[in-house]
Image (cartoon, rainbow, N blue to C red; front, side, top):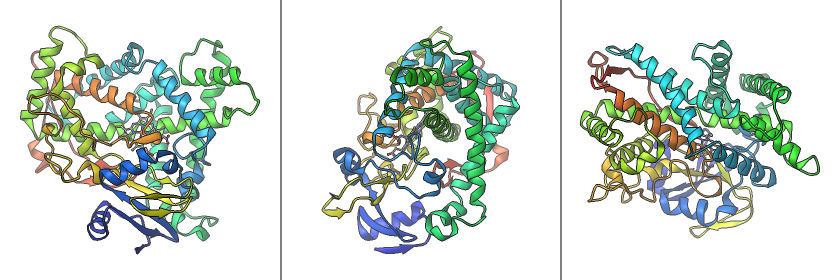
Length: 450
Ligand code: HEM
């Protein structure tokens, strides 16, 4: 046991794991927390004992802001279950793996290409572009429309979400979580609550306008589907209502943006600095697509090397290193330890994604981590960037489709090179709820064959 007065960094957790083993506890403020490291412990909690480990802690800043509503911070129970099932079904019906979702993504990819073409022959920081593109794909699912990259309403919404994220992963959120006595004081974390109210207002407006333009039974997007669901179930004891809808919309928007765009940035950084990997991907893409003008998600089965590169990018991106914190929903046990009901649990996904013994090359970017001796794509059990069990990321299907279609299209059309004037590349990350590469410049060259 040790005493922490702030959220531990990945380096601190690594040191503690070396000293205390794969399962240890520490205090965050006065709250006891159990940290799980390595595939065995994480899998036992999240998969084998999934019902016992699928709660969410309350009284963190982020759970207070979201009032435990929506999906991400909703505790294990009927509202979480109903909304999770609704969101998964709706995303699937909008074509995860089918054409219509692919069309939405491919439309966005064409806008990314236009932006990159404007920068061909020079270099640019891709952070903003990838962020807007990932947001836009979620917008198209939720609101039924995408926004131009210079639309002021869209840009304001994005910047408010960025402001909120900055506070949520910063020192004031930590103080809020650690010292409950501070919560009533007018300190900077109050701003996060105001920003969230503004974002809610935006979502509420979209719901109101959908109510006046919808045709019941003919959904155009996720909001229409939700309104149909309310009509169908009626008021009697249902967990579906306008308030929950707004929290769900924001959850999908927030969860689906940084995660995907940070993964793209990580992939690009490694591809620029490993030209042989980029060229091998390019050749495989050309061979499979031949004269076709665009890729489909099902093309992945014919592209083992590209698949391996994308999975390796996700492993190295390590985008949500400590998952979203869990909580035990009853008294339980794990790896021989007794855990009382209500214990906060941190699944250290990062420790699994780099665990010695699980990977051929745990610390380096190498697509061979996902290839067998015959060059076929294989996914090791320790590939858990989306977590596992009943809380596994509900946007996994969407994220995988996005990453594949975006990266395949871009690698076919452009060559990406490290701009030498930038000096040596920096692979270090900014640690947070969603971990990201430090800003860098992407050298863009248009391929002559296109
Ligand atoms: C590369 C992209 C992504 C990564 C690495 C990622 C990763 C994760 C992780 C680690 C969790 C926590 C799971 C747990 O609590 O054990 C999570 C939850 C979640 N993700 Fe994602 N995610 C990604 C993209 C998306 C997208 C595109 C969406 C939106 C459609 C999304 C929506 C959600 C939601 C709603 C949850 C909460 C699920 C629940 O509590 O039941 N994610 N994600």
